[in-house]
Length: 248
Image (tube, rainbow, N blue to C red):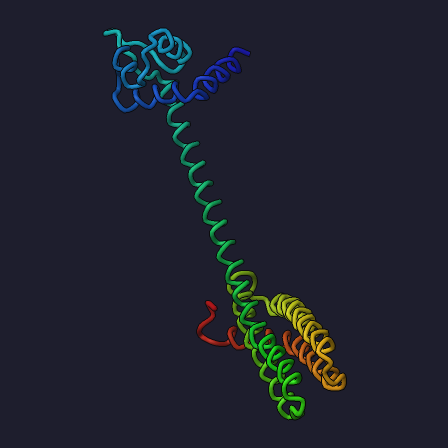
């Protein structure tokens, strides 16, 4: 029971910042007079300083010259305190580093998503305007533009595969799953954009058959992306596994 009380006194002494400051001062100077401690603390109230020194009784003792110094328990306690502070700082730095890493990963993923959708959205806007102002747009032109949109999305998927392998997993199976999920999300955004363009065309009284063609090809582009995405992940994964640059 007495041992427990001693521990409680030690932890109570270390809990107060002024007492920790006194302990650190005594560790640095070896010993110090009452006045030196008071001046170092910047306290004008001598009673308050006396109170803190009294509370530090298990950790601080007076020498034969009347100066204060760390006892053996105090030296062990200040060592423990420094270890705790060091671990706390390490934890804080680790949390900060992980937070920065998470922010960096999120921003990079956002950029990959923007790059993936840039080409198809540009194509959808371009074709919708062409259908409105140039009704004679040929089927060949439409197919060519949607192929350009699909190619842009494929490039985005390729970038996502590299991103996923670098930050999450180098497993072919997991890469394929993650890439498929990314492709499905991109396909849904693409179909949504096509639907918006379709609605915009209807409001401008454009030929409905042309709008159906645009919507159908947009849906075909999205389906094609979902199909080829896991294939891209597998091919890239196999290539990087057999290639010297395995750190990617």
